[in-house]
Length: 114
Length: 113
Image (tube, rainbow over all chains, first blue to last red):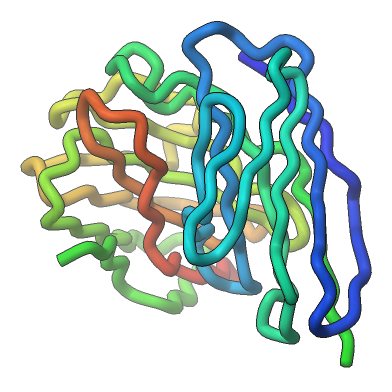
């Protein structure tokens, strides 16, 4: 299983861009990178998933370099409601053998202030 | 329906009680999961059901007993719990054959007294 390393916390002001980098040096060929957001006392919410290069949706962008040993979640123009814990998960969810083998790392607490 | 529904949202139980947590999804997902999350910690995997069969048990004590009656339902039966079992219990599901993310429920906040 690919182990992930993220910063423990990041602070930002409203309107700024927040970039969270996740290291996953032993990522396997079939592994995807998935980011989740979690608010207190709620379940994690899927944000974005990617395999290589860049993925963008209405919420965030995910940048993955060619060696795939790290990835960066970019949250544009954050607001107070983006204050949450962000988790980077790496694994292969395609085959039934891999189900349940995604593991949450410690996550990054993002605090957005006015 | 794109949700995972967990009931109850809150549960307080004594150490001699028997209770059950319920999880339901109607997205056609064939993998369902139970996670346990303590305060300020990441979710920890407890059980995985794949096509209604238990495929992973992460060495969970027998006082936690999972059950998957059908492809839409997942239960977690609780008996003789300890105060340290107090946590947020999260259910999740994922679709077969696709590299999509997990869908999590909002969880059941369990307090053992």
